[in-house]
Structures are given as structure tokens and as C-alpha cells.
Image (tube, rainbow, N blue to C red; front, top):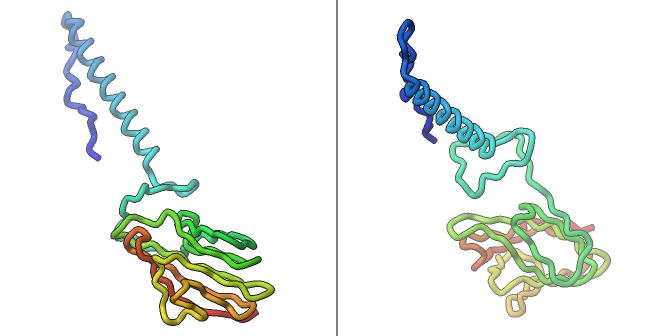
Length: 187
């Protein structure tokens, strides 16, 4: 951002000592000083409104941050709780989401990044108490390693209780979602 403050529009040699000085020169200098203060205030407010902050949440409004080195970072965990029926995995809720089934569930997705940007959700799902099914959308391309997947129905049938990790990835705004199983634990 370039500054609109113009210190050169103030006549620093005015008023001239020992002379009768025109009041217009005073008015011109006052106007230039006032305009520069106004520009300075606007630029300071802009800096305050658009800065990255260390003491509050910061939104970069989908602007690109480049050449960053990150250390000791964390990702938000979004817990859906114990659910059955239709469950929406909202990308804006966080990249790591958890579900405990209280019945069979059908997944849908919401708020993926725009095309040409990668969106990813890891789903940590605990199938509790009994066998439940997980139905994915027809836009989901399921990898061979997903236990219990029936490609004819888009349904994953889990034989019993257990904890499974799935990753969903898209680079085209959710038109196609790639799914693979990261792992499974029997509980």
C-alpha cells in the first residue's frame, strides 16, 4: 500500500519572520496539514483493520500467504457428537471432524474451497454399539482400501463396533471428492 500523505505540499518556509504574511498562506498550509492528518488517520485505520493479530482471530479472506514457515501449529477439531441420519461435513468447521454413530449415517459436504484450491477433511468416526452403515455421495470416488465399501450402492458397511479414519479431498470445489481410509482401530 502506498501512502497518500504528501508532506511536500506544506510550505515550511511560511510564515516569513519579520514580514506581513498573507492569511492565504496560513489557510493553504492549514488545509495541507489537515488533509495529511486525514490521510494518516485513514491509513492507520486500514492497517489496524487488516493486520494479522496475535491476540484475536484473523481472517485472511482467501488471500494467499506465501513463504511462511509454520511451527507448533494445530488444527481445529469439530465434534459432531453422537449422530444418525444425514450429517454435513462443513469444510469451514475444521479439517478434522469426529462422529460417533447412534445409527446409520449419510454424509454430505458443504463449503469446499473453490476449484483449483485443495480442500481436505479427515473424519474420525466411531461406529458404536452395533453395525451401522455409512453412505457417501455419488460424487465421492472411494479408494480400494475402504473396508466394507459397496460401489454399487455407495454404502460402507462396518461389521461391528470400531473406530475408522477417512480422508476426503477435493480440488474442484466438491464436484469430485476423493475418499480413502487412513486407518481403523477396533474398540
